[in-house]
Amino acid sequence: MTKQVDARGLSCPQPVILARKAIGEGSYPIEVWVDTVTSRENVRRMAEKAGCRVAVEAVEGEFKLTLSR
Amino acid sequence: MTERLTRFFASRWGIILAGAVIGVLAPLLSKWGNPPNMGICVACFERDIAGALGLHRAAAVQYIRPEIIGFVLGATIAALLFREFRARAGSAPIVRFVLGVFAMIGALAFLGCPWRALLRLAGGDLNGILALAGLSTGIAGGVWFLKNGYNLGRSARTYPAVGWIMPAIMAVLLVLLVFQVKVAEDGALFFSAGGPGSLHAPIVAALVVGLAVGVVAQRTRFCTMGAVRDVILMRDYHLITGVGVLVVVALVTNLILGQFKLGFFGQPVAHSSHLWNFAGMALAGLAFALAGGCPGRQLFLSGEGDGDAAVFVLGMITGAGLAHNFALAGSPDNATTGVVGGISTYGMAAVLLGIFVCLIIGFAMREKRA
Image (cartoon, rainbow over all chains, first blue to last red; front, side, top):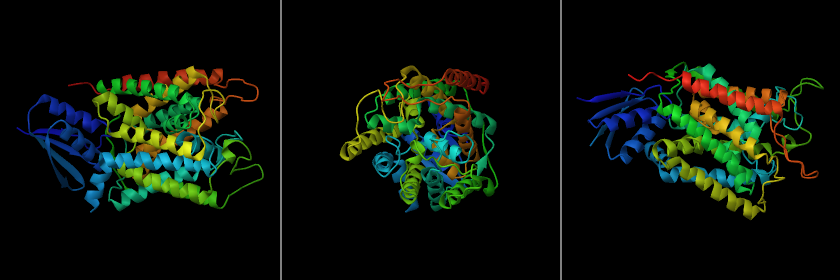
């Protein structure tokens, strides 16, 4: 089952903290929702460093990042 | 093209560029007229703006600093160009205001924001070490709260007009500055005749530098508090690379310009009261960490539509007024008499009160873990 992380409206560093926690739980894929480009880039950088593949999709001004191994 | 530029600015080279740009331009601003080791200081410059508006009457620190205006408007321009301008607000604004007030009181105990701490160090002012140690301690406290569920809650998208308020305020300040508005003989605006407030680069130079820094910093998310926080929180060295580059480049620029003077005592617009340099910045660091950004970053966020960051900025400007009206700000060393400066007993009380308030905010605003 896809894990959902809703980090919309949260300011730095909350989206990264939430995404990292989800990665720590170890089941994939993980969908992270963010609503700023800053959060998108921060989550992407953290996830790539943690060894995930990251696919980004823009949905009505928000972003869905799908993290997988 | 836009996307490729965005990826570049988000990359390691992007943040190195940001550090280098600030590292060169800040010492140059000192060369062009800004106070020594104060080419850029967000706290000091917001304090000067508060003074120019008459929110405090410390005659030596009153001037509308075009750099601050440039930071906000530069971030607005960058956000519009890259379609990132996004009006949002509603994440505990009153808490952010209070954090801004105490962040400023802490920063003025030291006499500088984190940027100036770095720039002072790069000019040979070793008090910067105590300040950065204090800043890191405060941020470490903030990280502890973050790890324990501290969170100011979500902001929500709102009317575009909300996001335009801060850029509009800056535009008004620019008009007031350009026309040197004076409503009465002893009324606002106030411009210092002596002291740090009277030292400033030409308006156009300061504004252009401010705009350039605003654009680069908005794109790269340059943040001194975030730099330290990310290292402590998750061993992420992205932002701190930019901070390191800033110090090295500013050091080299200062050496080339002959603006380097090593020591603790008698540094320009600085005091060498070690304990209060440390404690003041510890308070500031804690407040920045709880608010999610250093003073510079809050300006850039406010320029791209973040109404909560704008409230933090207004809190800092209010804090500057309080700091000078209540004699809380640091006074510099006196090089002639050899007397070491520092802060008043009221200042000490205010720093301790600030730490206490920040701790309450940190403990009280934690989401219960499910």
